[in-house]
Image (tube, rainbow, N blue to C red; front, side, top):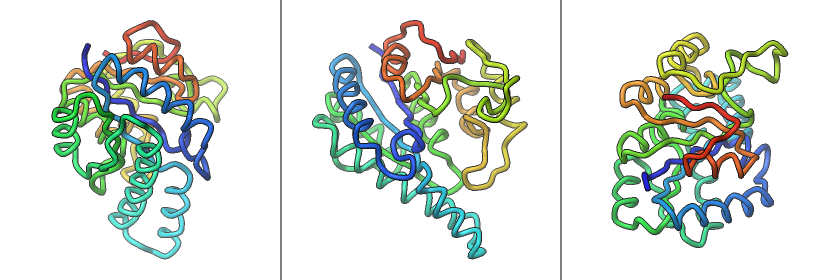
Length: 227
């Protein structure tokens, strides 16, 4: 079966503090999926990352360092998840190339990583890892699909069950600010990577483990399919 890269939003894994119950549940699901396919996991920063970025802005610290602080938080989150997974490698790769090498060398082990370089969101890292390994991408977020605007703020937000990569790029470009933690549900760089390599991408509610599993296994789900 085709490899799968699963991007877990930090707001799901650690919304202010690590969600231990969620980590236990998703660890069990990832272990099950790992019996059927090669798995790579990319973890975001969540609210803790936002706290550091906000503090850095108030201290007039530059954007590069703001990104670097958020990346450090993603790696802490990745280490926490990796240590909760019996099949995971506890070495947290710092580059997409290193992650691919580990996935190829140890296909029965789950590779977990966080961010890589300033300017690259963890969404972009996940897209690059999927591109570099020929994997499908499952993006787990705090909403149930891709909308044309934030459904938590706008009641008239339009949900997409299916969409083209071109449409994703269009929406990502509309909302992209290039600031730390400022982007559409999938940022512009990630969207363009998905577009250029025609990466099969699924966006699902990360708190609904059945949705993640369905997307990974190629079954119908209630999120968004991007092709």
